[in-house]
Length: 70
Image (cartoon, rainbow, N blue to C red; front, side, top):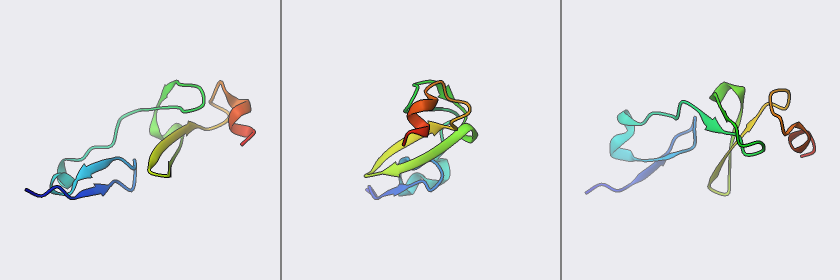
């Protein structure tokens, strides 16, 4: 059984290599600063120490101060 994992270069989620053709990036993400669900093009996705972090663009996020203060 093939259990090798890959990391998607778009959404940074892990998937089994054998399932590469079946992988779909999520339709929405949850902002780490404000907790709201949002579309992928409304912010940035980062991979930090193996964890996925999505954050709204500052002008769209209610927690604007947290984003601009980083």
